[in-house]
Amino acid sequence: MKILFHWAAPTVVALLLAANLSAADITGTVTNKTSNKPSAGDDVVLLKLSEGMQEASRTKTDAQGKFSMPLPDDGGQHLVRVTHQGVNYFKPAPSGTTFVQVDVYDSAKQVQGVTGRADIMRVQTDGGQLQVTELFVLQNTSSPPRTQMSERSFEFTLPEGAVVDASLAAGPGGMPVNSAPVPTGDKNHYAFVFPIRPGETKFQISYHAQYSSSFSFHSQVLTPTDEVAVMLPKSMEFKNATSDFNASGEEKGMNIYVAHAVAAGKQLAFTVSGTGQIPRDAQDGDAGSAPPAQDGSQGSADNRPGGGLGRPEETPDPLHNYRWWIFGGLAVALVVGAIVAVNQKPRTAAITTPPAISPAITAKPAAQGRGMLLEAMKEELFQLETERLQGRISETDYRDAKAALDLTIKRAIGRQGSSNQPQGSLS
Image 1 (spheres, rainbow, N blue to C red):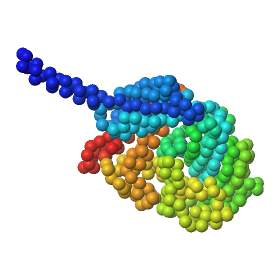
Image 2 (cartoon, rainbow, N blue to C red):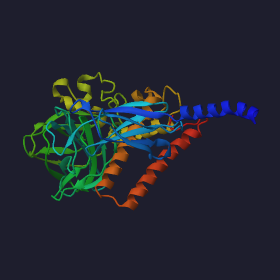
Image 3 (cartoon, rainbow, N blue to C red):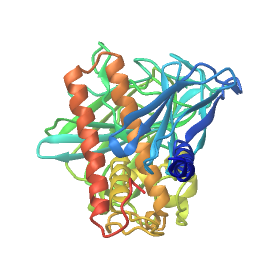
Image 4 (cartoon, helix red, strand yellow):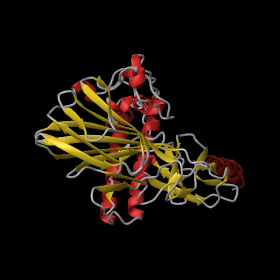
């Protein structure tokens, strides 16, 4: 017995040491960038991406804004979610990560410094319908920085008879996610329930209305906006009901009309007539430009005069900045994110994408593709949880939506696993 114990004891000790080493913790700090102080008492949740955003562990930040919680030894990717004053902030935690730094901001229903950079409408006709896709670009330059969040984070109006078809939202550096606007109770008046964090936030909405030979827009601008632009096929006519809009050149078979420095409360009126569709080369995206990078910087520059929107003196700077959207859209960016995330292979430096997608994107490393997917999933989770907390979604619908998200993630992992590459969770 003594001999057996003599040999067994070291083995048991070794096993215990191995267990302790594998049961690692993930630690981090949360900083309140509004006060530039540690953020104490925030809820911190570790989510397992390989199991459909399942909660792995939970804790709170201490007085120094620090936290520590168990990290599953599953080799998978995780996401750290910090909730501060009702707004969620996320930080990806790829395999091997043991420390993260998360920045949060104080939130308020109304924040000084939230203004509109651009409001761009693309108009076309199809089968007796007028089809419009509209992009709102907001800039939050609050000082000190704060997040604007309420049941009416961003309000806007639509023309009479408009029926919403689809909508997307994208936070600073984030991928677009589905986010449905809600009626405010006033006629043709809607609002997005989506946080407007410091930086640039984009909302895109597509809608249609019955159309015969002409259609009149009477929209009220509720947020002061640098540039409001209307783009339509050259086969259609634009008639300005006031003197707000000026012709601003044309590109790829579309005429552009712009109103500058539009004040809040301003009523814009114009009429479009005739028929026409956005040219296919404009719908497919512009091969010479790309969406802004995840850090907010712009893609490859266009060396043509005025960036392709006319001569430099005719090109409003905000429109030049969002030229990638004009010939692609947030929907294209969402598709790109999905294709990159699903088709990318581990340790692959370049990604093959369909011809319609900008070549500038193909040079991005696989790591960025993974980050794009994480951004998409975190915003989708935020929106789902927000609707649940506000009682805007039933428990049944919540479970169904969560299950659909789980299925999407599992399908992506499954496609990776069938590519004859080493198995891994989105790695």
